[in-house]
Image (tube, rainbow, N blue to C red):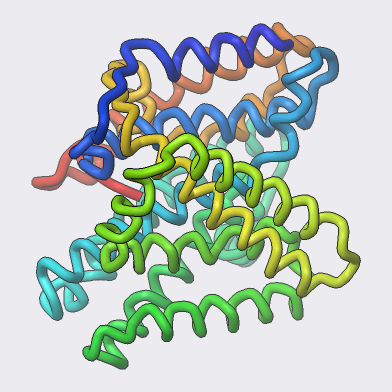
Length: 337
């Protein structure tokens, strides 16, 4: 199974460049490539939880919340950049544009999974279908979809309520309320241990220059510091028994991990057509991974992992084409999550 870890490293480093400073580290193209890498990493995370063997590979089974945090960061950064550019006009069309781009592929994925359930003999009435779509029980791992929609709602409401550049404070407050509600509802910890990365992404627009200045000197020491802090906070979050401790320490670890990734991209540039394809389809990869990760399982260990990745990419390509033709628009193929 460690072969998958080696292949993942090769995929990341293929056609990788290094410079004193990468001016395009947060460009759409570079961000798409980074998200492509982490999209396949989240699939490998779920595979690692269901396989045995290897020395390095099992570690991937424990890093899912860190990977998801990177997506929360880029989502937060993306919406805040657009808001700073377009102002209130962006908020007026926010749900019709941004949220719908998340919701429509999710609804299509629910149809696909319902068809799979129907073929396998499962039957639902309309009330059950509606309830399961809203709760995310039909599409495996779809808690992320529901969470990101809630986070977008917190962002929109925070920007509506204040126009004095204090949106970040309201976003943090909204995320805190969200975390407390998740704990009150006894939801699994993945619902809330990464979400403050969204606030980091929103605020990064305003601390970008300071962060760049921070990484310009003592670069490797500061990368190591971010890595060390990530490990310390994550271990603390998983060690202390109190649920609130997990929220605080794990989110702190995720924030440090996101800063580590940002620091890496400031000097390393990635020009990789495979990762670019994965990044362009990162949302579909997330939505349809459950078909082969947990619904239709082929083989064990290496065969299971290889078949899952290969068949998933084939399904993703098909479903992306279907989604584009079912919901045509001027941003065809340019959806961001």
